[in-house]
Length: 174
Image (cartoon, rainbow, N blue to C red; front, side):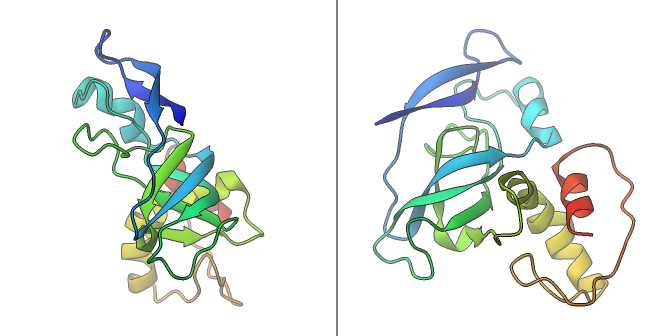
């Protein structure tokens, strides 16, 4: 089975192109996710010009439906709503990048999307959760709750930022 992907152009440096790639089967510890939405981060559109990797798939953050579960994976089933953050633009890792129709990812690098979040909100959580929010805010502000189990007493914090996935996530989870 093949899929379309947004890759760094091999013919026109700094540009993207649509290519066909195989859909990879998940290994025993991985999930295969049919992508429903992706987020756009600054690195996604800056990479081709600043760190060219012709043929590499771009895109880090995604959300979608689990369509296959590796045999050793627990806590996930086909039909679950999943999100995650890929390391994109890596030609040495065949499945890297989320600007595809299907993503293969280690199950422990994915999280369940709560029903109250849209696909777009789930996708925007990727780098935002794993970097700025996950590492800095929960610890430094002693925030309770998670995207899966929101706190009953939210704290409101202002995050001035430009328009990208991290600022969009922070405004969604206010």
